[in-house]
Length: 497
Image: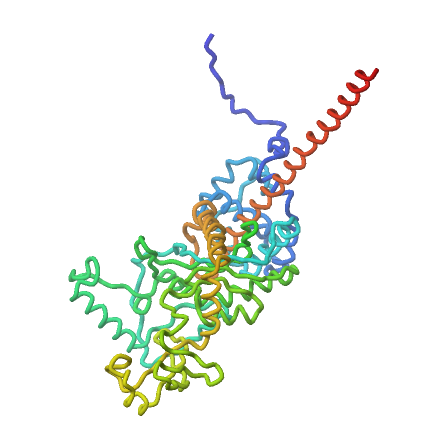
């Protein structure tokens, strides 16, 4: 007889979530992993002692962490998804007949809490991972990747020019920068001239079109998100992005630091601030930082000297155009001068700056030495005297180049590629970082910290389950050995005369 299932849709008189969610469930284990009460103390000063009760801080952070674990960027979809999952309701502490918070309440609470609260949550999870043995800390891999901002290129507006040059402080230790300042008039004229040349000379696809508009961070800013910057990733179209910079422990792949930076700056600019905060976090946990692995984008003479001054060995490849030795010229450190093939000295003259603002050292020969030199037609045919330009951090560059050429340098390059790049792939595709759903650099920083917390929590749960499973597998083997020994003893007594 064919059966027909009927759905009466009756009211359930007895139902407990704790009995329906299995013990091995992810969110049940996550609820028992952390003591979330410290969030009340961290957010106590934000609220007044009067008025209506707010959204529970623990519930808020659990909600946004669920969004990262479920790869949900929208707050609307997050609330709808949580209402359909029994395990998530149990994790949040909500019953079946309780209404979840409104999606706008989540957005307002995210804006209300400062970034320090999110970072404190990251520190607590990191400390628990350290206590479980997931952090070694001596070698850290650093990298960055663009994350799409919550703004489109259609929101770009021309910047207002300023009559005088404005100096912007870009020191690495400064706090998160504000909106982009107005561009000086001479910079706008220079960019306009370059764009006009590109349009006349066909410098790009569609550049000759009458309505073509070449966008730049110097000339345009986003009206909806002024902190978002235009950036181009090889093989992809330009877009408004943020830069996600993070550090990963090479031993276990755990994220030890994450920060949001502006996407129109070089990676090397952000390394001092990243390493300073990373070393502070590891020092509080009594973990030494010995080595830093990074790609060529972080190659900078100041970065080499900065890391070596802090007792950290930088395994960062130098630029391909770097020349450790100038052919035919010998450096004499006692005189701080180079000796040319003709035997003449090129002493140090002065410092200068390049187009990107980095410092350079000028070594220049005497005018009379070059004029009577027989090698002048081949050495400096079109100049009056020989000039060499070197970096003030040339010694640090040379040490980095020697480490790069060694077998240990090649091995660490493979370690960096196999450690930090898979972490970025997971964050972008599985932990809600394919796009930032908030406005501003501070809000983008909070989103990146939450993704890193969710990643570390899941890694901690997996590590604990693996350790318990290995202990469980060890018990039957020991029992089998005891049974085997007892059987051989009985068999030996039976065979005895």
